[in-house]
Image (cartoon, rainbow, N blue to C red; front, side, top):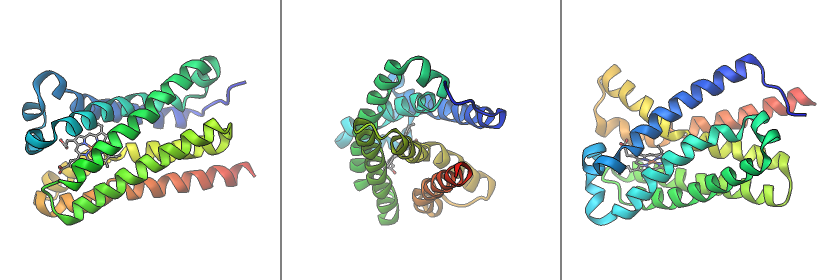
Length: 207
Ligand code: HEM
């Protein structure tokens, strides 16, 4: 019997799907018009890092899209084989997109702080996703779910970054060079903390 979600959980999930889909479309546009036109601020990666940039944007967009559906209890219970295949695609995608992200992060023109923030995010992303995969392989589904919540909270850095950036620049009038390094940490550290908080809250309310 699949666990039932409350109305609030469905609303939160729908907001997450809406935001993730918007950012995934933004990322995937380059497949039709090229990185220079779709993401001109990333054009400097093209001459030397076309492959990692393409892998990062395309597969990042894909994992952002499929991730939320893995959490829906009804889908998992009804189509377990689909859940497993989408899970394999998600895990492989995060590892490839994460390695590509690490290469982009190491070469960002945004300075040492941004390099550090994004590199740590890439490492944490690959680590959390690998742990989730290993736990599923060992049939420890409780910990598998916990690591997947951590992994997707980090995947959502793609969304939070693109919320914080316009809010800081347009809303607060701050310059890109100032906010971008800060956001390289701010886009994921609070997400990781929120995931830990949620996992503790769930545990406490079950006990
Ligand atoms: C969670 C781990 C992730 C890390 C570590 C990461 C890292 C990076 C880095 C280092 C850059 C280049 C920044 C620069 O050169 O200044 C970048 C750009 C980008 N990433 Fe990611 N990323 C992550 C997740 C994602 C996901 C899931 C998506 C899917 C939509 C995504 C889409 C993009 C896009 C579209 C850009 C181009 C920059 C822009 O237009 O805002 N990233 N990312």
